[in-house]
Image 1: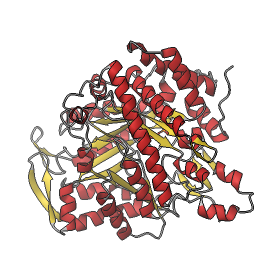
Image 2 (image 1 turned 90 degrees about the horizontal axis):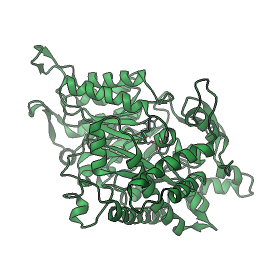
Image 3 (image 1 turned 90 degrees about the vertical axis):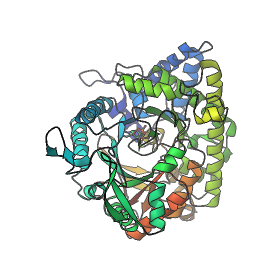
Image 4 (image 1 turned 60 degrees about the horizontal axis):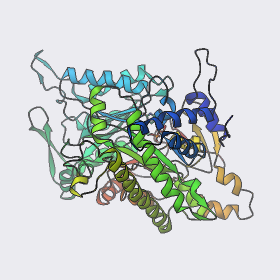
Length: 549
Ligand code: UDP
């Protein structure tokens, strides 16, 4: 029996419900330690193609950083490594061309991906608008929204990996003729329940917004204008929909493509379901997160350990690209051409509390900046070392890394994931978000509702200065101002290749104008997108505040 992992009750519940192997009768066949051994053993097989690979040594290092809860790979890796499905990535983007063949080929691939616990993103911008002509049948087109419903229904029918419900991102360009229907659709809570939606905003649109001009809506089939709309009215319409239902989000397409490391391979049109991973059509990416809460030593940050974890994390994820199976030949080819990986962090809010730094303070931005710059720098060094031994990613020639003369094994190395489940397993705050509350209700993956008390608060609450500590350090998501949320997003985005999963939480009393201000600020900050959520704007909320106030 190996040494035991320190897991709290909710972590054990999630592991038992969703991750540990069971036989057909439902009997558990592995312990948490055996799960991490299975993952470490399987991923370290990626070392076998490396002439200097050290699979036994790496297996131990991988096992140790997972069982110490210092690093965890995304859920599909925990679920599928060393098992028959063998599909290890969380993020996929699939193409949707303006033809029935393309649409239904992607529906089929989506089903296969959801079965393995992966999430899918699509741009529907190439589909001809509603009521446009369909030559073959002499009929009229039903438009992007009707086809998003097809993907939504397919998702409904397949429970991801048996227990993980499929997650999708649907994207439409702001100049698509059906944009109004797309923006308003999720005001109806019964619509597209398996989709997050995002409007893809261009620089040109934002210029029209600033200058209060009209923008042309373009039919993607004819490339001709099919109407126009005032830019300010349209962005306000989006803000009102987001105010009412938290949907749609927005992504800034040109900012995303300015950071595209392989423009010679293709243009980026979409992201994965939670927005943190822009990808080319048919591309997939595996994520992994360092638990910042575990790198605090004697009231300070253990920089050496962070550096070590970054190197190990890159190596782990590069091995994942090697050993993963792929749902189709196109996905295998595109993914192994770029070998993108997304190393990030979780537990940032807990790190700040341990260091005595309020989340909404210049100190928090400074600390976050130092951490993410180190991870970014060291991840590039690690990817460079791997490239020297294992060769660069096959599309390296012509990439931005080629132009910078920096040999890389991976087209990207860093992403800030939401870590929705990973943070429960690690017993820490999620991603770079503030704590939600000191006590709150949470619906765990699998639908079980639990009461959660923040573990750091549990230790602090009996201190004589608990009230003061609560106000100063345990800053809750809704207490943090929208601009403090954005500042943290900018801090991390500045040093991350891919994107940052971040929600700007707004109090129930916030207005659509507040949301418009956030869009404009996010754009000016150079962010790749933004998601707002006004408290109580949706009937079903994964997190809701406790009743302790
Ligand atoms: N994801 C998914 N279904 C889910 C949750 C997540 O497909 O129920 C995918 C999606 O692409 C998301 C990514 O996994 O953007 C990372 O999410 P998160 O970090 O919350 O996943 P975890 O690894 O913690 O389960």
